[in-house]
Image (spheres, rainbow, N blue to C red):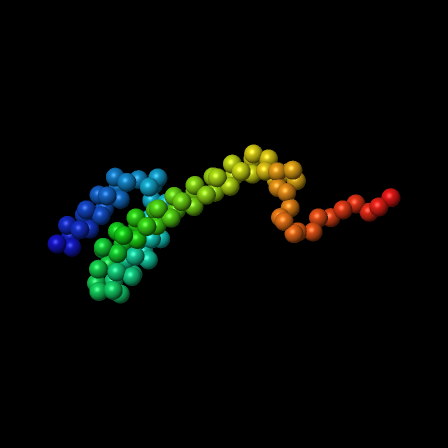
Length: 95
């Protein structure tokens, strides 16, 4: 039975490719350890950890892309970022 599971895991890893693996390895390791500690369900934990790790990596990539887009849109100019209400604004010395 274990041999069949390992063969299926190996086939899925080969089919999936490196594009989908981002975040999966770290999640699989954490999930496998947690599943083992929770009652010898390491394979189920590894699969769940892979899915969760992939989703977290995808969200982080989207956040980084959005931050880069905001930075290129010129939002760092003083006119685009007014000071917060109640914040002190530096003024020029009187002449």
